[in-house]
Length: 337
Length: 268
Image (cartoon, rainbow over all chains, first blue to last red; front, side):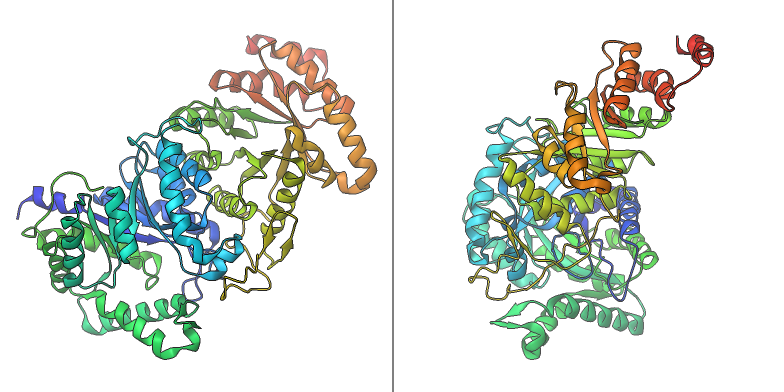
């Protein structure tokens, strides 16, 4: 294995998702959560990762950070090379011009390091809090995609962002309309962590055939643990964390907590796709994604199944143990985005 | 008298950091970041600066009354957490004074740790739109709450009036009439009584006319209408002048002339 190849794959790996929550199982001080975020980002940068990623939800008991761009702005002040991503920011829940300006300011403050991953959001209560109709979220997204580049081009009097044309846009999701938008704007993709390598390969082949030439990114829940008993315990924690988050979702017109069979099906999709096991097993799962055409991996190691010291140890293990095992996998050249 | 240094609006993060560090090392209370075409969202600069400079207050001046106030409140709350509770929010009307006042009330309601319902003429939270079938909450809560139990919100420009009526701080602009702080504050004090105690009375000041002129203006402002904050535009050099030559002279009601004379060599 060559060192050069090792370094190349780390530049194709981002870590996620920092949401700065204080959950019932993992409570923490709300200010301390942002200090930990900076510490973790500095470690990710030191280890050579491409990026760290945040996400967005609002009005939830655990304080899930509703303003990921401001959390990332805090990280920008402490780092100088690490890229900063959202996977995803709910673009359909914001005033598009204000959002474009916040993103442009972060782009400037960070020296052009923002990867703006955007998605629709799905909780009715979030839309309703902001006075928006959930059924118009697609329209809101299209409006954001139309207006943001115009703000960045200076039409509203703003100075130009550092990245030419504005922050790099990534589309989260895999619905037909999401893929259509990605093809239309040639945006990079962040495909969901529940998709199999086979499905991902088919999606990438489909959009490539339609002329899309941006970066194919995929999310994946991941945890390296050699001991089978301990790995099973981490999987149990993952399932509990997911149940807690998804129980409040609406599935086929019902709260997931009130539709246990639907929640269970969703839970199995997540758990089955999660790569939890020895470094060899985890690397095999990732190799399948890379062979399917994935060019960028957002590895969700921060999935609410570990305390802070366990998380940092896991970051070190991913950086040390995966690159040698992926040295023979196909890796695109050049920077993702 | 407290001092905020207003950093140049066109500076990059390194330049703004240098200004903030100079404010800190010269004993000033903090810096103010305003909205500009270079930094259209000053909260972003505040959150970044918070990772680089400890202890000082970081104030952000932004427009209020157009963007949804709940969305603004979320950004404000997260920014305050990144600073460890050092944020001061200075709000200026974006549109009508009526919208501004309503936005101010919704923002401050949202920044409490209570589930709430807000029924304004422009904004209703939650909206309870019939189309949001699963969004029919009676009350909602902004999470996470800011670090500060009561986040300082000041009104600026035309927004000073509504701020004063609410017992909040206010920031007069340099070109406001000389009694800008006084008459408005006296009116508010009449209405509010003891509720007006403690509301910061700030004015933008300039150093361009020299330190003597600034000291005289600050002493007059304090005497006439109780000014207790000064926001002075400047950079690293101005921080040293304010810290060494201005601030010491306006801390007490008066100083013995010999004490000031003793400082003269050091000040030069």
